[in-house]
Amino acid sequence: MKILHVVQSLALGGQEILIVRLADALRSRGHEVVVVPLIAGGELEGRLPKHEVHPVPRRPGRDPFLVARLAWAMREHRADVVHTHNDSPLVYGVPAARLAGVPRVIHTKHGAKAPARNAALRTLLCRGLDAFVAVSSETADRARATERVPEGKLVTIANGIPTRDFTANPESRAAIRHELRIGEDAFVVGTLGRLVPEKCPTLLLEAMAPLLLRGAHLLFVGDGPERRALESVVASQKLPRVHLLGARSDASRVLAALDVFALSSQIEGLPLALVEAMATSLAVVSTDVGGIRQATQDTARLVPFGDAESMRSAILELWISPALRASLGASAMARAREHFDFDRVVDSYLRLYRGGQ
Image (tube, rainbow, N blue to C red; front, side, top):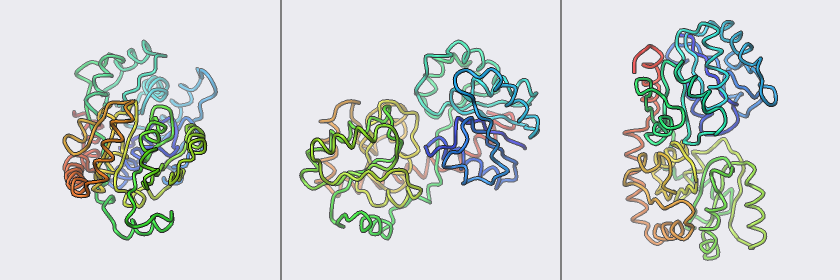
């Protein structure tokens, strides 16, 4: 098959990493893949062969001619399947696929967030899909409510990762801690993801502030507009042991250096970083949003969004109990390998591409 993915960009993020991994896996199984970003020049473009990336840049504001340009690219590549990801690729990619006569059109909603704009248009476009994929049951519920996706077209495929690439690696733990000048016995909490408002990184910093003064370390891996807010709080409160590492390509090594993985998001679908942490045998503390409860089951400590004190208490409980950390981490690793291995994701999408459910 020739499979064409339409994406907003190939910037460094969970959704984009999933798409790159999916392209790699499909290629390894003998299929031809092209990824079409609407914003050119993302950090992950270099992870794909050059002939597999065909940017079709979207012009600022509404771009009525983008549909025609996308349809031309789909015809040029003779796509058997077009797979769009999230809002703008849905709005422009689905009519382009129908204009180009593509036999099968699939869409994936990666997050629970539903933009208010284009709601009626998205509902109409979803009726022209062959299948609509949600990454968690809550995301599926949002799709029913906001896009009004017909039940016969709605499929849930949870995100996955190559679980055996993420393990509790003592060598990586020692190397990263040495790089960051963190002692082997220090207690280290970390998070991985874009520093954007919906991830609420300042909530995690607020929860950790008293613990930092008691000797804990906090790592932020990722970049984005909230970085300035974090730097401002760190400077104004003179908080020690906060490490803003920016975007990194060695997430698996950094995760191995942590004792606890934390998420403070307001909105989530099923974050890849969470599953990566689980596969690394990390105890998890997270806000109870999106598909996180479904993903973790009883292997994590979940707290209400916005409750910094509850998040702090959960992290402190894990700090003072290494046995509890180890127990939760082992359960999380087993669950990740059983339910979120990437081969299952690839198998599920291939069934959809071939016309099944």
